[in-house]
Length: 176
View 1 (cartoon, rainbow, N blue to C red):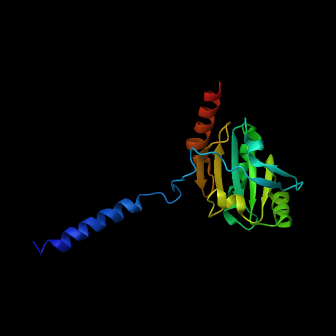
View 2 (cartoon, rainbow, N blue to C red):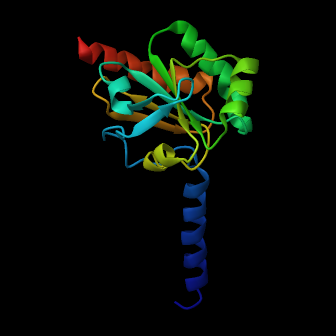
View 3 (cartoon, rainbow, N blue to C red):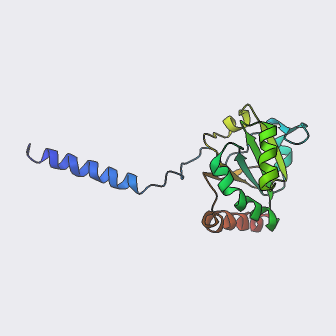
């Protein structure tokens, strides 16, 4: 029996390794799915107006995108956000995360502005409430202000077509 113990341990460890390698590191479970989007007082990026973010989310399907000018991946996904904005099928709210307004404005001037609203989250308070630990992160919020989807990392056309658009369609149909 003692001869087989190392073999059994090796097989168990190899099994865990095999399973682990098959997991998608971008698909981390979020405890916020199904919960209400945090209702914080936030600052508007363009006007410095202070408002409750839930007021801007109620009654609309929203894509909330956490971005920063210093984020290389945010630059890579920006064209996808511009395409989504052209479709005009949902509200796009940006959260400028741990950035400066000057750098954020330069970013948007160069690449375009897909956002209907932008929250200025220089301190990262809203990001902390959302559990943000990497930019970009994207959320889909339903008409009642409930978080229905979270993506860590770049949005791609594949993710848009396979996950986001079907969810948006489902949310629109359930509202009828």
